[in-house]
Length: 197
View 1 (cartoon, one colour):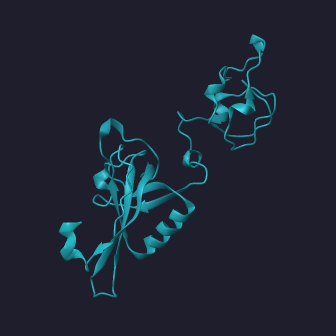
View 2 (view 1 turned 90 degrees about the vertical axis):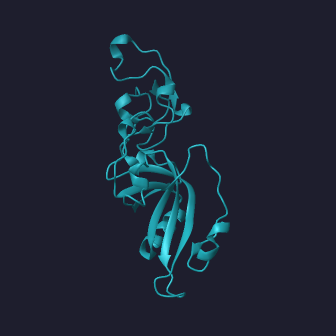
View 3 (view 1 turned 135 degrees about the vertical axis):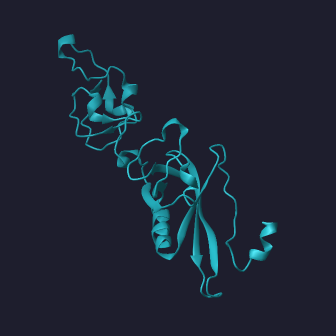
């Protein structure tokens, strides 16, 4: 597989940028690939010049552990929020899970100590947990103090602002559940009506 045209660094590779060409055996690089599908969807680590053989070590692919920035979809952002044993679902959250993000803030306009909880976002993808992105092995939970979420730029602003106003609580979702519910804020004012929610 060679580059049909020059591929700039950090560019997502499409099939149109590649072609298969016959090359004498003694000129094939040991890391070269012979199937376009090996590279489509990957991201070039550095510039790949037109006519150059595509090497496995020069492309981040889905099955490789790339840095977090290479795993963020286009037009999305990564934001980390603080969690603890309770707010982080006791460590059972893993990369690839979906969560709802709740925010609880004190509402001094009602009375001292009054609080309100809002569901900020629903069905948000978890990119990483803890300080470094790694999978939870053998289905064991591990406690972390941060969870990194995949959000839109607008959602990132809301999370950054909310961090200054209150505390977060994550709710783990089933992988099969993508329903977004129309939820109202819940707090001191409607606490007595919680049974009808």
